[in-house]
Image 1 (cartoon, rainbow, N blue to C red):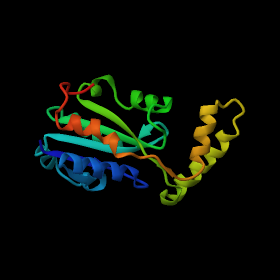
Image 2: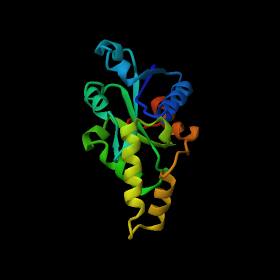
Image 3: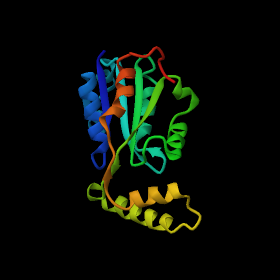
Length: 183
């Protein structure tokens, strides 16, 4: 199965996952900026296309481009993955996954989450300032739960909780190793 992995990455976590995934499935890797320059006939040669973006404010950055294209790719195996600083299994991850696709899109796109991390050193200045202000504001929240306080403490500095094992379900899906087209 000929597979294309398209990604956008600000600090390198999503790029790392995209590279791991491309290596695992023997797929081609393309940065979103390059993908946006390609004509529709370029994508016609692929059986499976996966988009990877990073999480910001419980949304997948630049997913709109992929979702618009995917309407014409329903005959392909389609997947999206999102990389964020929140550990897998946290309620914020569930909310992001629930809101990222419409019910119709879930019929032809499978969605995954990969925990990544936070790299203040690699963030753009506006993003870094926004994140620091956000962490400062919510860290002082009087009614924060212990879990929220732990999350805010973690977000106060750079960290890396990425793990290659999170690509396995994505790779299996793209390779057609599951029986369902999408969940």
